[in-house]
Amino acid sequence: MSKSARRVASVAAQWIFSAAVVYAVWEWLLAPNLSRVFMAPPSAVWDQLTSWASNGTMFSLSYTTFSEAFVGFVIGSAAGLLFALVIGLSPYLTSKVLEPVVVAIYAMPKFVLVPILYIWLGSDFLPRVLLVTAAVFPLVAIYTLTGIRTVDPDRVTMMRLMGASRAQIASKLLIPHTMRYVVTGLTFSFPHAVTMAIGAEILFGTTTGLGGTLYTDAQQFNAAAVIAALIIATALAAVLTGICRLIGTLALASFGTPASPART
Image 1 (cartoon, rainbow, N blue to C red):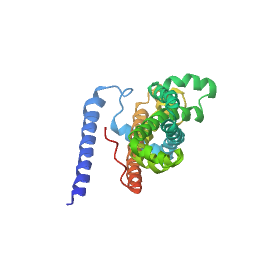
Image 2 (spheres, rainbow, N blue to C red; image 1 turned 90 degrees about the horizontal axis):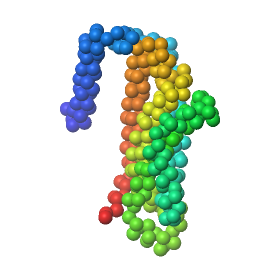
Image 3 (cartoon, rainbow, N blue to C red; image 1 turned 180 degrees about the vertical axis):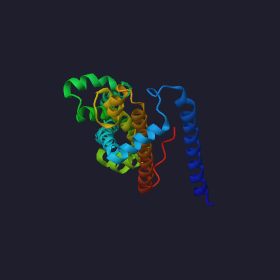
Image 4 (cartoon, helix red, strand yellow; image 1 turned 90 degrees about the vertical axis):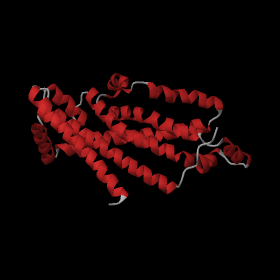
């Protein structure tokens, strides 16, 4: 067996073992000793999942949450990349004014925006997307800005002395060098966007998406549906994380080996 095959088998065995432990604790320790209002048995959750899969509810719930996360991710990523480039290429005073904005948005608890977004825009698709955007934007901006600041300043000075414009410096040096940091930021941001979309659906009190299902079924004390929705949400985030990592690896390979950070 090759080294890669052994690695895949090892990872699969770890997942199988973890799933077996969770199932054993759930089936023989929690379910028999707790009310079905609080903890549904695995059979009831499985019946709920198969029912949702057969009537299309699983796809509908996942698609609603994914669409919110994806749109917010795209807008937040584009804004984060642009903002980071502006800060990185701006004069000293301008960057000192703009950078605290990114830090403040990053530090701010995003869910405190829910009341004001609800007053302005209601609880439909747009305010939930804006909440996801507010979560993704600072992550991508900070990772990108970190990459820009690891560029060797001597190389930037040399290009400026040779008459290169800011756009040329960005396209020829900053962007290729920071691609590793950008890919890392995007890889972490997309699953986070899914989590924020689910949280937004819960806090806005919607009845759509995975968060809306968690909200409504929890109010009805439907433990089987709540646990089923949690399983779908976890699986969706895990799949998206794997896809993002694969795309990131391919993107880095297409750009070649990124430049090494400047030594201090």
